[in-house]
Amino acid sequence: MWVRVLGSAAGGGYPQWNCACPPCRAVRDGSRPARPRTQSSIAVSADRRRWFLLNASPDIRAQIESFPALHPASGPDGARVVPLQAVLLTDAELDHTLGLLLLREGGGLVLHATEATHDTLRQGTSLLRTLEAYCPVEWRPVVPGVDVPLADGLSYRAFDVPTTKRARFRSGSREGRVVGYRLTDERSGRALVHLPVLQELTPEVRNELDGCCLLVDGTCWSDDELIRLGLAGRTAREMGHLPISGPGGSLEQLARLPVERRIYVHVNNTNPILLEDAPERRTVEEHGMEVAVDGLELEV
Image 1 (cartoon, rainbow, N blue to C red):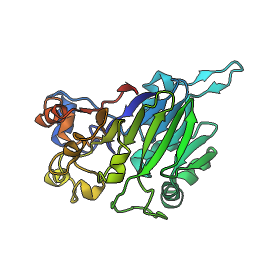
Image 2 (cartoon, one colour):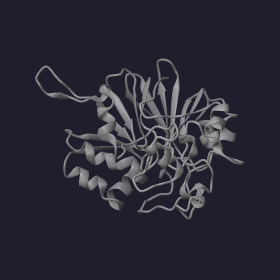
Image 3 (tube, rainbow, N blue to C red):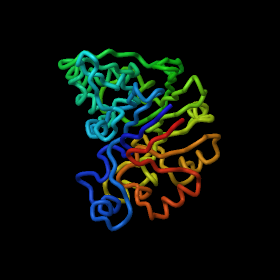
């Protein structure tokens, strides 16, 4: 399968419009090596013709324009041929769903989402009801643990990612609020796991990572990162994200797992690993981890 990282930053992108933290200042003034990033989303395909989005960020239009494989073409009868087949959602967060509204010009949208996510988007944010006023939306319920074929030998299995983060909007269930996806190329047997939101690496989540190429939550370097910068009153874990560093951090835990390739995505603008000359970035790389950039392409 082919994978394109369309956006590798957490909500707000990098730099974030209202932030003057050290990484944001550095990328704006060019004082240290760093690259801007848009908000988290990836595209996956088994044949480089039909593509599936995992999350639809507010930057989706620019992300599609930056990737020619997602550009529309004209069919023999002059009709539009759009490579985008469907969107798979990990949760109902705004930075993962606002881009759905920017896809409203299509003839329809196929949306894979859990019942909890669908309920939040319909009854909580009303995003789905707004979208459906412009185009038909076909909801395909995501049930953790069930294998679902997509196209050309590409399939997925969602798995529940437990979270204690406060739900901003009504949800019918605590289960399914956040899921990860294990995508498998049935022809080769190789797998990609997309896990942009992770609060705790439970045994159940670990079981899904065996032998995969892993795109994993890299939101914050330290648990108290946003508190120390005076930008928030909650820790990374309290916001639903496992920090990279420290005892029990993702760096320590992931380095021991039988994972083919480990790449941080959904990186917050405050995270020092965005600075390519930072000691934190060196530490990540010394542990065999990578930091995704927009436009990174993988063949899995």
